[in-house]
Amino acid sequence: MERHETVIVGAGHAGLAMSHHLSRLGRASIVLERGRVAERWRSERWDSLMFQFPNWSLRLPGQTYDGDDPDGFASREQVIAFIERYREATEAPVRTGVSVTALRPSSHGDALALDTTLGPLEADNVVVATGPYQEPIIPAASADLPERVLQLHSSRYRNPDRLPAGAVLVVGSGASGGQIVEDLLAAGRAVYLSVGRHRRFPRRYRGRDMFWWMEQLGALDQTLEERPEARERPNPLVTGVGGGHEIDLRRYRAGGVVLLGRLRGIAGARVQLADDAEALLAAGDDNVATFTHAVDAYIARSGLDAPNEPPAPSTRREPVPPIAELDLDSACITAVIWATGFRRAFGWIGLPVLDARGEPIHRRGVTSWPGVYFLGLPWLHTLRSSVLCGVGDDAQHLAQHIASRAAAPAGRRP
Image 1 (cartoon, helix red, strand yellow):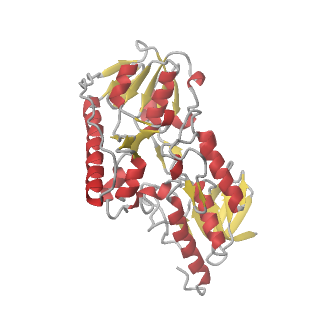
Image 2: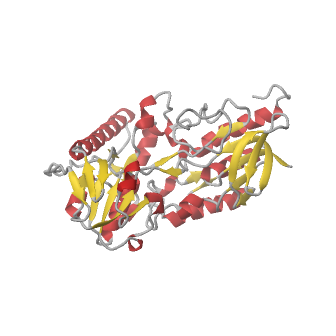
Image 3: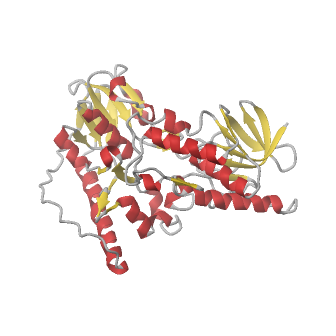
């Protein structure tokens, strides 16, 4: 049977960073990928997607952005090319088109057994680097929609031309929901948006991008132990489309979007909605003041030379009128897009390293089962753990742990 020191599952940016750090320490590994390198960027993102953060934040261990537009925003294709170049530069030992269907103890000593579509393997270590966006979350109420209404998750949305003619209901107001709404508006579609919890940020403030300020404030390096409440917070609501801009859901109304509260249920062609749209928008707005005050305080205490921000123009922000029920037929809605996020999908792991919710039990990616690790998940260690510019730190930590384990005498391995 084929045996390896370390098997890395997933050839996205996390798996490739892991392979790079192991190689630097002289440790052998292979990377198994169910599709192609960066497969989710290729097949589970819409055509017009732009990276949320500036190009200068595109960095992996040993490779940084070297283009001529550091303050611009990369397209989906440019992110894929960046990751592909990294694979080539690091000569990562990737095997594509290989799915791992089970991970369990081996009958041979303390090894780990993997069932794959190319046959069984054994390994001393397995790093699960399959990313945070695994299984689409679609509310159970979706089953009650009329069959004539096309419904798809945001990971299956590509462009407006692939949708039937008519209005579109987008459920979810995170970054994906916001970008898809704008994509539909640009195509002249009538759009209804069911708002959820979100955190609005200014795209730029006092001469810098919000992501730069987050780095300066140390927000990206905070650990879950320091900010335990942060796990439940929505991600920043910003976009890189059109050179990058702030997403203010209230402004969508000027473009004709009908803002709705959270979806409560569906009965045929009738969608029941909560009376909470205005409250959700107000909570999202509050984050802007929190963020800008934090930046102002940082500038004041650090003496940083930053231009003053002119006061925002006074605008009357009309409250969003409550809509208790939406008739899909009357609104001519022919498609529903569920921008409702993802859950983990680790059912193939047959080891006691998951909690009752199916979430990994670990400390900075190290589990209690010898040789089993996780990488690339949100808050694996810090806020930046799952993103391109942060996954390398966790990969280095795990590589050192694996190297120490390999050097330890049998029976004493951590």
